Length: 222
Image 1 (cartoon, one colour):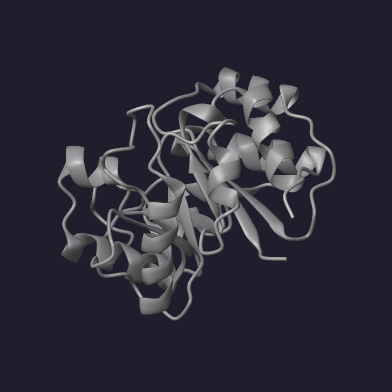
Image 2 (cartoon, rainbow, N blue to C red):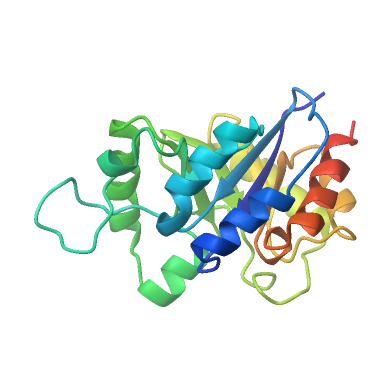
C-alpha cells in the first residue's frame, strides 16, 4: 500500500474566527498509517491552528504557504524560515499563483528552498511540468497543470500519471502529488493512478464538511 498525502491549501482565506470554526466543525475517524494530512494556512492563523490541533489531538500536520528567501533581519514584512521553525513542519514553495502573480523566479525559489531546508522544514515544491528544476532537499512535489488551476476542470488522470511518473523518476523517486480542481468526483481517478501519491486541494478544503469527505475518501482507498 503506497503512502498517500492530502495537502489542503487555504490560500488567502480565513479570519481567526473562521479558522477556529473550521477546527471546531472538523471531526473525522482515525486515519490509516499510510495517509498524511497537511494543512497549509495563512501566517495569521498558524499559531491558533497549532494550539487547536494539539488540543484536539487531530492527525494534521501544519504547513506555511510560502516563506522569505531571506534569513532573519531587516526585511520588513517578510516571514523567515527561522520564524516558522517549531510552528509548522511543511512549507509550500513555488506555487503557481506565487509564480504568476508575484513573479517569483527559479533563482528565488531555490533560495527559499535552501532557507527552508536549513531550518528543518519539509518542502512541498510545486511545478507545472517535467522539466522544472526541483531542489534535492524537497520532500514532496506538487504537480499543477496550468489548465487546471482554478478552472474547475481537472486534467485527465492518465496524463497526470505519466507526467508524475517522469517527475518522480527524474528526482530519485520523490512522491509526486496532483493539484488542480480536485473534487470528490475527480479524486478516485487520481488516487487510482500508480504514480500519483496524493492530491493538493484548494477550494475544496475551505469547507470542513467537504474536506472531511475527501479525507474519508482517501482513507478508504487501498
